[in-house]
Length: 203
Image (tube, rainbow, N blue to C red; front, side):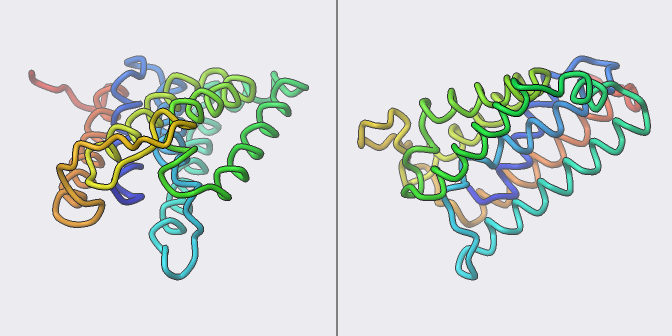
């Protein structure tokens, strides 16, 4: 799938597990889910030939900034958590995340960063940097791997083994990607509104 579809599904999955009525949990879900949903594609160089990768990263930065500003405005607590936990663990987590992202950028697409090993390493970095983001980041990352397994082009899920895992149901681009993206963003918005008590979902 393409970047926007990964972001949408990552956010929707993360918001789905957010604590109902908690602004902090919802903010963490939006940030963690969107970043987790796209970080595996740090192995794509955002060149002119891969504008989708650059657009996706800009969207995630925008989402994170807006979410954190909302957290600050509502005094929800996530920003306060980061300030209160400034120190070696946070810096170590940021450094590890940066190293993993840099290393991922120098690997083949759908190899290292699309593996369970990379997911565990990135999750460790997020835990050190900001523990409240961890479950949402992990769900977002898992959603990325799950979506890419559906594609005809496989991923090296069990890297360093080179065997690719693929269900071969669709291509990364096309109608399936568009449907997933629209459904993901719609689900994310509806779930967020429900979790914040803005609407009532009838099931």
